[in-house]
Amino acid sequence: MAKLYYYYGAMGSSKTANALMTHFNYQEVGQNALLVKPAIDTRDGVKTVSSRIGLSQECILLEDLEQYSDEKIQSYDCIIVDEIQFASPAQIDFLSDIADFLNVPVVCYGLRADFQNKLFPGSERLIAICDVIKELKTVCWCGRKATCNARYNENGIVRDGEQVVLGANDSYIALCRKHYKQGQLRQD
Image (cartoon, rainbow, N blue to C red; front, side, top):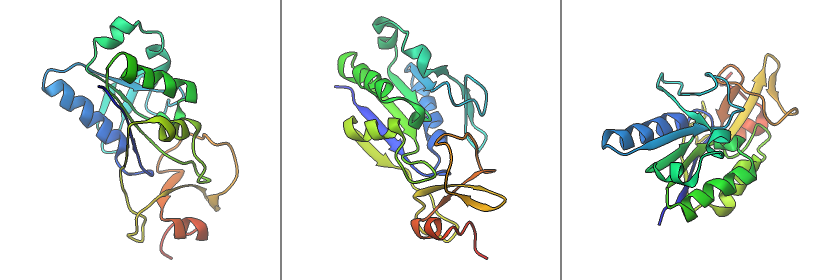
């Protein structure tokens, strides 16, 4: 029986690199894996998944996958979805149907919580229904485990605003809970 997997972590925990490596591993052994991401993520191009360490691969959009026939979806040995936090709860249910009714494993990678430590709707739905949940860890500048995604600008940590503002190292940093609460972006 296929499963729905959720690998989450704070910024910098190599989620995208892991998604790309999983895709490569399937291909390397002759399996047919499909790499997918939500359309809202346009940072590295509309149909490209890119990690900060330089790995990249073409992908399709989750919105396009929703239009695939069951037969086409079943032609894949695995569906790998990056930036899953941007998926809607209905899209998460669709992915669970792929695992449950089409018997194709679905492996999702993404953030759990936003810059205010609130769950993304897609992440919340995954936590509620997925078969396997694993954390990919990274560290704060102090060496502790980073669990918070802090949005920042020239004035420090941003505490209010839209949930989704696309960015990378130029506007987000992973912090431990203590330094997130203190608003301390680095050792002074």
